[in-house]
Length: 195
Image (cartoon, rainbow, N blue to C red):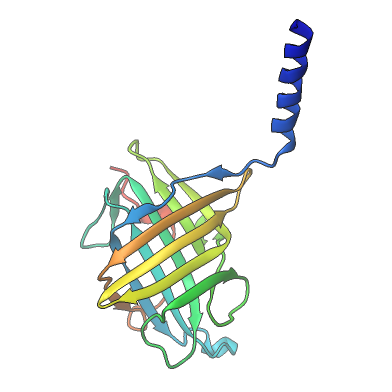
C-alpha cells in the first residue's frame, strides 16, 4: 500500500514537471480611464505610409494628475504604434495583432531601450510603490464601438519565464489626444510617482 502511494506521488510530480507552465495574471480586469493618441503619419519619413495611434488605459485605483503623473496602485496597459490606413483619424473597429512590422491592423510588441519601454506592455503598480513591467510578446487588441461607447478588449501574452497572459477590458467614452501637436517620446516608468 505504501509503495503504491509513493508511486502515485512520483507519477504526479513527473506529470507536473513535464507541462510547460503558463501563469494566468489578472483575468478580465476592468480598466476605466485613459486615452487614445493620434499621431498621423508619424513614420512617413521612414517610408511607412500609415496613420499611427496609441492606447494608454488604467485600472480604477490609479490616479492621473493634471501633469500626467501616475500614482496609486493597479494596472496600466500601454499599446503603441497601432498602424491603420491613412484615411483613419479615429482608431477603426477591428482586431489588432502584435507584430515587429508596420502592417495594417498591427501594433508594436513590447521593447525595452535603456530602461525605457515602448511598444506594448502591462505595468503593475504595487501599493508599496514598487512596479513591474511585463512586455507584450504576442496577442490581440480588439476595438469596437457601441453608440458613443468604446470597447477595447486585451488578450495579451506577456514575455518572461514562465509566460503569462493578461486579459482586460476598457469600456466607456475615451478621450482622444492629438499627438501631432506634442510629438512622440519613448514612454518610461521614470514619470511614475511612488506615493
